[in-house]
Length: 109
Image 1 (cartoon, one colour):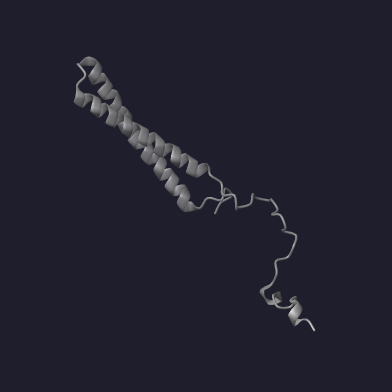
Image 2: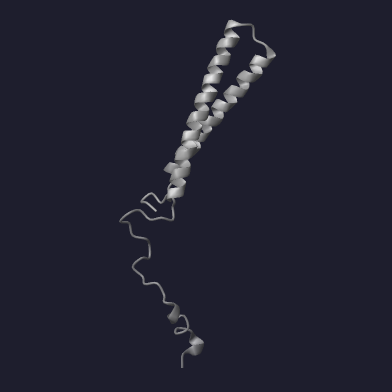
């Protein structure tokens, strides 16, 4: 675990998701541009509009994957302390498992 509180699996998954999103957004964006160009040069048909919407949806899915991957990398776990910080109550010693029965009133004589 590094200072950000992210484990190696999360970092690898986020990088993979961002690269996947980049590839999908490039494909979706290129198809969107091609379909817009074809619709401008020719008369718009029902099939061309449907394929344009599918390409735009693929572009949006790729951008969404990039954003989710970036958020995974930027997320910090709140339960992991900062490097060099002191947790509240850190000056008190933790109770030992052997001390549990010593301070009970019924066992004191």
